[in-house]
Length: 202
Length: 202
Image (cartoon, rainbow over all chains, first blue to last red; front, side, top):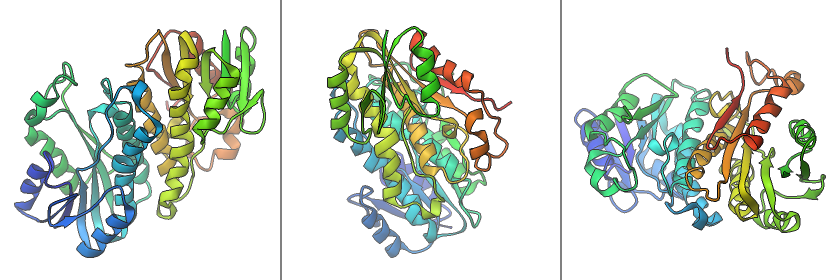
């Protein structure tokens, strides 16, 4: 299987790429590094990436940003940062990547626990994540040629728990191997329209 | 109570306005009609509306559009129609309306069943609705002065069931009085951060 992983060199992307590369051909795309560079806020850059990479069996996105700030300080432009980057970046990846996916291929997008369990400062980040969840549920109804689409919503991963614990009071960190399994399940499993919630609130 | 209802003259807005006007002062804002006009895609127009209306106890939005089309035909601009209108229109209404709400006032936004149960042609509409749901859950954590925020997610209302039944196969129409009650619950109740799902899937 030939797998394109956008953001495949980030905190979560690196172990996901490593796991999938054991048995598959992995191409890592990144903003500044990787096998190929891509600017997720620019659909022309996304298109150029696909033209360079060609047909693949799975497209995974583990990239996307949104501004964290107090709601009272968020400007309209601040909200559009997340809409243009993490939201429309991923929508454009699906829109433009569709014809570069082989039959029975898959999209795997990324969100996070904030869609369901937001914390302070995340009106934009939560909104973007919630939008992607509903997008995936709607898009799976229309994709043809056996193409699937899922999204992995991860909680705070153990590797970054210390850095983020003040922002996520009482959140149980999730082991990285479980998050990696979320992506493996989406790419190698058969499910579609799934929000793969890799977090532990119990 | 002084209540501003944006879209208060639409299919759902009209009975909501009529119900709330029985015991409260209602100001209806609309794109082309009502007590005051507003363009929800333009934050300057929203700001001008608030400057004209002044302080209120409740801000209700029953307005917002997104493009319905086959996913394969949706352009990037098509997605931005919904983002600028129904999504950021409502976010800007909260952002700018915050200081025009009296203490213990409330925001009530509107989405629909598509966030949870999308149908064909609704990748954009579902996405916008899902985004608003998570936005409301995040915003309620930060609003001060006792200000609340909820969203009413309505199913296909009986009044419009015939027009939409082909798009919503097997959906049970919901009586308008129940949808109206969703708005009444948000405005006159005490809940916050609630997604008031006014639909019936049983």
